Length: 326
Figure 1 (cartoon, one colour):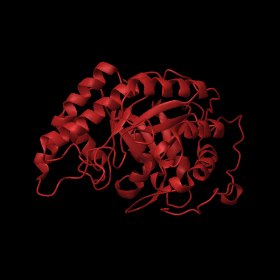
Figure 2 (tube, one colour):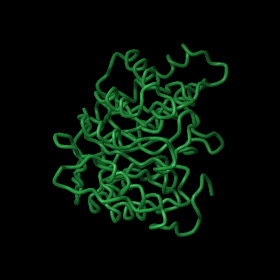
Figure 3 (tube, helix red, strand yellow):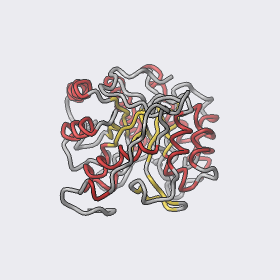
C-alpha cells in the first residue's frame, strides 16, 4: 500500500472531474540535468508543480557517493520547505557503469553485476522512505544477447525478490515500468511478473502514458483504467504510435483529456510526472509549458474555468532552441 506523503503541497491544484480525485503533477529531474538539484526543485515550486520525480544520479542526490543519509535529510528538508511531494526514480543512464547505458541490469548474466543493480534499488527504497516518497520506480532492462526468455524472466523475479522484501519493510511500493524494448515491455508483461512472484503487496506499476500510445493494444485512456488497481507511479509525455520517442505535449498523437479523466476516476494518489529526459537542454522552458497544458487538459470542477495553455512563443528557451538533443 502506498504510504501517505510526509509533506502536503503548499498550493494544491485540484484538477478533477466531479466525483474524481485531484490530479497532482510533477516534473522529472531527468529532464533538468543541467540544473543543480536545489535550483531544479525551486524552479518546479515556483512554476506551481505539486511534486518531483527525483532520478537518483551523479548530479542529483548521487546514491553511491558518501554521506547518503545526511544528503537525503537535506533534500527532505528542502522538499518540505518548498511543499513538494516526491517519487524516486532509478532510470539514470550511467549511474552504475560509465560505459553501458542502464547497465548492469536486473537481467545481467553476471550475478555480481545483477547484485549491483539490486543494491542500487535497495538504496533507492531507503532514500524514498526517508523522503516520504510515494514509490520507487524501476524497470527490467533489455534481455542480454544469448539469454533465452525463460531464463531472463527467472532472473528478473529472483533479483527483484530481495528488493521487494526491503520495500515491504520500508512500506514503500516498488513500481515496475513496462519499457519498450525491455524484457518487461507491456502491461501483459507486468502481470506475468506479478503472477510469477505471487502478487506481493509491495509490487506495483509505473504507467508511462507515452508508452501506452507507442505499443499497447489499448488506447492510453483504456490502459489507465486497466492498470488502475496496480498504479503506484505515472509518467506522462506525448508520443507517436510505434515510435519510442518522448515528445513535448502537442508534438505527438495522444488525446490527453480522456487520459487525465480516466486517471482522475481511479484510486491513484501519487504524482503524474512529466518525463522528458532528452530535453534537458531546454528543461526550464518545457517545465514552464507542461504544467499549464496538463491543467488545461485535466478535468476540473464545474465551478472552475480552465485557462487556455500558453503558446510555445509565450515561454522562450533561455539558450538552446527546442530539439531532441543538445
